Amino acid sequence: MSRIASTTSQGSTTTRGIYHNQGKYAEAEPLYRRALVIYEKALGAEHPEVATSLNNLAALNYNQGKYAEAEPLYRRALPTLEKALGAEHPDVAISLNNLADIYRNQGKYAEAEPLYRRALAIREKALGAEHPDVATVLRNYSSLLRATNKESEAEKLENRASIIKAKYPHPIIAAGGTRSINSENVLAARNKSTLMERVKEMEYDVAISFAGEQRKEARDIAKGLTDAGVKVFFDEYEGAELWGKNLYEHLSEVYKDRAQYCLILVSAAYAKKVWTSHERRSAQARALQESQEYILPVRIDDTELPGLLPTVAYLDFNRYGVDGICQAFLRKIGRGNSVSEMSPELKITTSSLAFIREADSKIYRFIPVLNSKWGSSRAVLTLEANDPEDGAFLDGLQARARMTVAYGNHVAICKVMDITHNKDAGASRWELTLHPESSEFGPAFELGGFGTTSKDEYAQKRVRRLLLNEELPGELDDLNQMMEEIFIRGQDDTIEILGSPFPQLYRKYGKEPKEFLEIAWVTGVYLLRTSGTVAEIPRFELTLTGQSLAVDFIGRRKKEFSNRPAYEIKVQGTCDLGKPEK
Image (cartoon, rainbow, N blue to C red; front, top):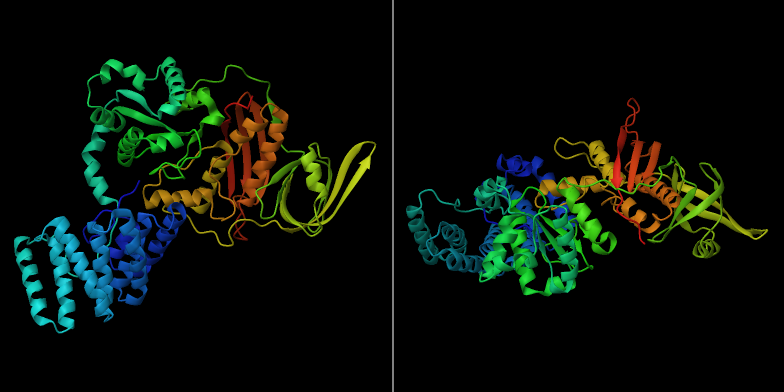
């Protein structure tokens, strides 16, 4: 969870802040705008980090004298800060002062004065009447008063500011002008000493936080982990230790300082409880200090937990069960065991299934293909529906309907030209004639990479996420992490790669290994192509052994330059599938 924090006028140490500080406004502005888009997409338009970006972009425009451009940005940021922090928070005063400065420089004195008054009142109440931040508003407000010929009032404010300045010869804030807001430096300074202490060994490998309604699930997980040699904090194991303790303080210490990880069973009951909220806040305070993941959420239902971003990866209890959660944690700490019961090895390099997804719909189907002819302007698929719902779907297709079809290495948005249902000796077959309209996917223009990582290297990370369930999204605590996540998940608005589909498909179809493999293969091709990750797939081999899926993949990116070969992505590895449904 991010927090707005006041900083000096030196600004952020990120690239955009450095350009800003050096007066390189042309270089800084696109970075600020890019940051704003990423925050809005990842966190929502009313998140405090969005207000931070709005303030910083507005300050950049202010410093260039672009007051008309800065004004709507400050106006938009103000209500978000008020909602997130409260109407009397010092950072709200920063935003009020900044917006008042904009009005004053545009001659909108009537709009500026009440904002200066409110900013002054907030700072005096929060910081004291003689704080250097108060002097900043006093000087800015006095400039307004002089501009409106209120000389005596202006002089009084300037005298107050001068007295404060004499007491603080090295002021915290330079008088006048606007200030940027960011959320990085204060957290870093506050947590420096705490981070140094993290090297010591934790008393517990994991602390389990849960509501009483999930005590059975928590008890079973605790037993499974304890039997595997994991040090678990579970209240039933701590009877004597907890006896007579101030539980509020003791549990805060456990969840904040004494466990390597915190496993939270997220449910509607959990979100409502006072004690679980206390445990969660302690865990989140710890998570803010860590450079790696600390909170491990396990969803009992779909309840949203305050402070837990929807982008944070979680495990679904209903899918994994106690054994799956325990095995996942053991792998997390490097103690995972191989599957003891191994099934025969199965391998495929193509699929006999067509993946068909209706336009503007989340409904998709896997239908066996008996024969096919696929050309650039006409494709004919002979289909045999094994499922009555698939047969009804095919019977209901209308000419000129649009759908996305993946079969073999062909993936295209197609228009239905004809559909014929033939019944021969009891067998039902459909001949589907299509006109492939487009096989180009992904954004029309793909932004370059971030930092030292190119867009092709981010595409490679995306492939590893999709095929191996690696490079998964975690806490998005700063701009760099958010930009990385946007580039990894892909810049196409319709298909975003948040993880591998293979474990979920195995859960549903794993009891029939051959069927699972065919479905996994064609789904992989569909997602690799429609996300714009690769344009060609020369090699895609899946090998199923027990609950492990070995992947051998070669894909080529869209060719950009006539004198250079297309960038080639090679991935080999294993995706852990968990267990199929019983």
